[in-house]
Length: 284
Picture 1 (cartoon, rainbow, N blue to C red):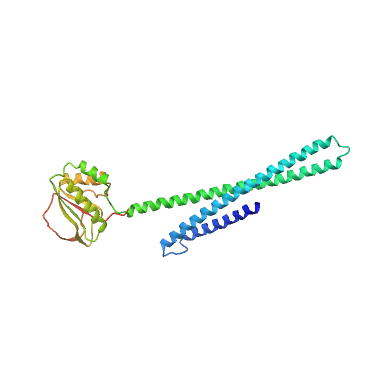
Picture 2: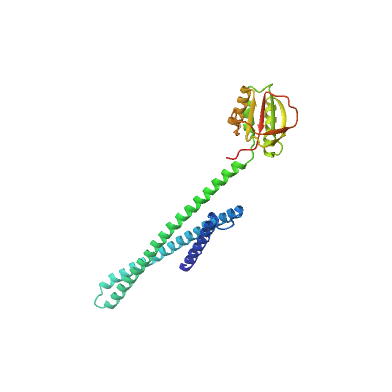
């Protein structure tokens, strides 16, 4: 069994080496510099190879430790047996000198083998500690990568109001009933159009007179980023607060519109109490 555990230990160290090389090459962008997706995939595979190698090494070291513990126990039993034989021989010193020396030799040999096994166990303990430390670092690296991936997914995820958020906004809207609102988005922005359509239905349910101008604007030169609300100060302030605090949307503060270029708009141009422009999602 000793050769089996040693073979597994060598295999684990080879996998660890391969995993480390893969991570170094990808983290320092030494390979696939122009293909981040493939480089990230190779880095992920390397991390798993590293974890697998560390797991195999750890299992092999544990197996080796158990094997040597069994050997030590067997040798200790042999030593005890030899000592008992020596004690019985002492009562027959006159006629068993040769056998006494033989027993003492066995004891010395067993003690030497026991010390050797103890040294191997100590070495195995050191290797286990090192493997556990490397495994912990690999797990930490994988967790940090997962957290960064979740942050990126949150940034690029489309904006949507949940049913709970919509009900919360509808229940808190006190100045909306009977007022008028124009909801506008850019013609080429699908993600903003979906969110703007949600606002059309939501504010319509709040008994506002909604002018649906979704996907009706074609900006020239520049455009608004995020959600902008203009018009009647009190009503605009309430809607701005509702969408930001209860809808958890990124709503621009009052007066942040500025000059953003010329727009070609379709549909009626009669002014309404407030206008909501749903621009592209801000990326932070």
